[in-house]
Length: 282
Image (cartoon, rainbow, N blue to C red; front, side, top):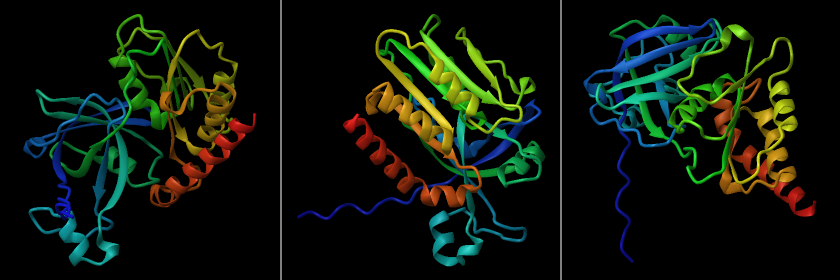
């Protein structure tokens, strides 16, 4: 039996901040460029994501050229870069500019504060891209639903669809000041959360939706609790086939990304199994 070829180590990209823009009170845009993006390429997925690499503390210096595998082999774990996952809002292959949008929570977190303070010339390293979803042109209509964390992917999906495509798009945000301009003729229903629990208004809106005729291709992402509820609604009640549904918890209330990513695969598998059993029994 032939041996499998050795797995090639993943290379990190290194980019510089070109410009920044405050889109809304709680959304910051950072555009990256530079020679370090020469080997970066994004395909047709509208949910492409990258894994940003942040030093865990001041004073940690990494060897050059930057080599993540070497860092993990030679440095103690507490000095490894901390990863944060962000959706690619846009990629311009001609200008070689990568656009990322960051939800801001003041000084809370890691990536948001970095984005608020980012200035032209600052360096950011990242892995990727990954991604799996793009609106299926053969579907009769499209359902897009999510909170702020899913807004970049929803906006990218809407902008990829041809004018006149049948779309039902719902985005839950804190309030009217968080609405954004999206370059699409599709109508977006902006759900203003106010003091309500995250996802409550979104679940209500999707549950009340009168589904158009035909096959739907759905994209539902955001906080894990409402994603779980909508997964049950779409899979069990609406009987949408798994292959026509992109759905996952981008984050979970009360967990940072490290804790959520560690538990996410098992959590998703358990929920899927529970709901598949329910769907079969129904």
